[in-house]
Image (tube, rainbow, N blue to C red; front, side, top):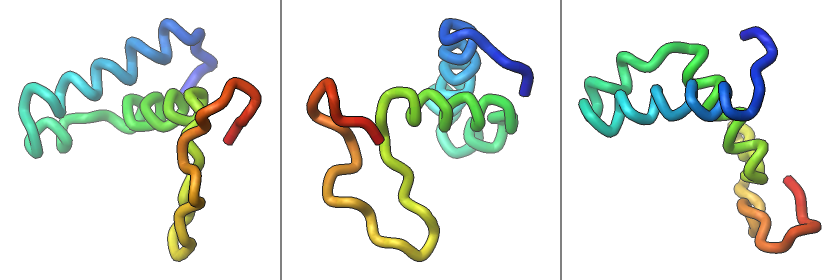
Length: 70
């Protein structure tokens, strides 16, 4: 994926979400790898902490204060 601005990243993620919202499970099969990557990057930018395979989720997956980051 080439470097995108935040508005471009948001639009790409929103297009993937739109496919799932419109078509449900069928829409999930239509989402491109770039759209999945954009959704993951946007969640990371928003502060959602990753939970790696085989590990336990942290007690606070989403930051609640301005200074708290993932």
